[in-house]
Amino acid sequence: MLRFALVGCGRIAKRHAELLAGGHVAGATLCAVADINPIRLKDVSSCFGVKGYLNYSEMMESESPDVVVVLTESGNHSKHVIDLAQYGRHIVVEKPMALRLSDIDKMVESCDKHSIKLFVVKQNRFNRPILKLREALLNERFGRLVSGSVRVRWCRDQSYYDQDQWRGTWSMDGGVLTNQAIHHIDMLQWMMGDIAEVFSYGATQLVNIETEDTAVVSLRFVNGALGCIEATTAARPSDQEGSITIMGEKGMVEVGGFAMNEIKTWQFTDKLHSDSEVISRYSVNPPNVYGFGHKAYYQHVVNSILNNGPNLIDGIAGRKSVEIINAIYESMETGKAIPLRRQPHSMRLGEPHK
Image (cartoon, rainbow, N blue to C red; front, side):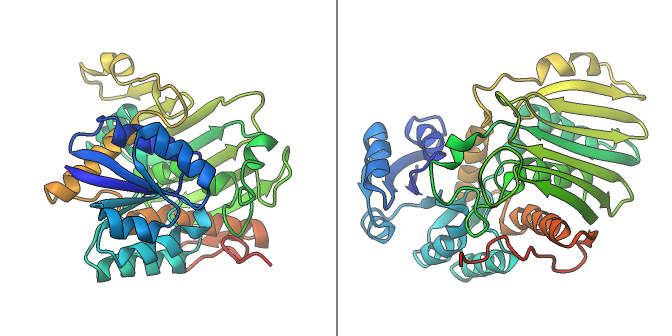
């Protein structure tokens, strides 16, 4: 049984805690939580019946968890992961794993130095419809890839950003691309392969924040395919869609719903008998935008540690989506197409607040 501890008791913490403390993940349990905010700390610790600490160093020394989960502000992920690595315990970090590529490289180096595994939360890779799409790609059912696109049409009003001062800031958060659409950007790259170049526009449409709440991005993949990202938190009055579409010379698949949870199109020129059942068998109805992927994700983490299994989303894999987002922001700032065959970076994302 692996003992997990959480660092950070913000909005996402209860999602992690309910899985780990509720016996939903075989081989995992929640032993403690930490947060500098005593109100949030008490809320989560009392809700799940575990001890709470105002100082995570004290928690690590007193509890000696097997795995620590970093759920703090995005801009603090790097600092906290590097600091926690010294305890020699495996680390899970929420998306985005950091805001700047140089910080990610330091995180990976620190975990390697202390011989621990670093896991980046990308739970949507474990959605049943997504796994079926991935299977079709690996079986080369699409033939030559033509285009790939993702759409994020979610609702985050001013009250969401007002929950915490760091939300929607360049120094600690980023906008819709970094916070919400990063899952879909990761998915697009995972399905379509490496990206050669991006060109983007971004705007702040309906809320008072530093960063963008709406963005459109054109992409050219290394394999010659083209792509598009449409992302907004300005959908009103509620979440509408979180989807991905892959098109190839021999077929087309669209996984839609509001959390990439529903196969809407499954068409191939070379048909299989099982194709007729795919839409009904591999679509799910999750209770919220988090979907069901976290449970399968944590089961993967446990297996990787206890059975020395593969780490499918390590620091190197987690870095790719941040690299893409940095290039997208640089394109917004310069008005130019930005290649990814170098070290792209946004001038604003992750910069200390002045």
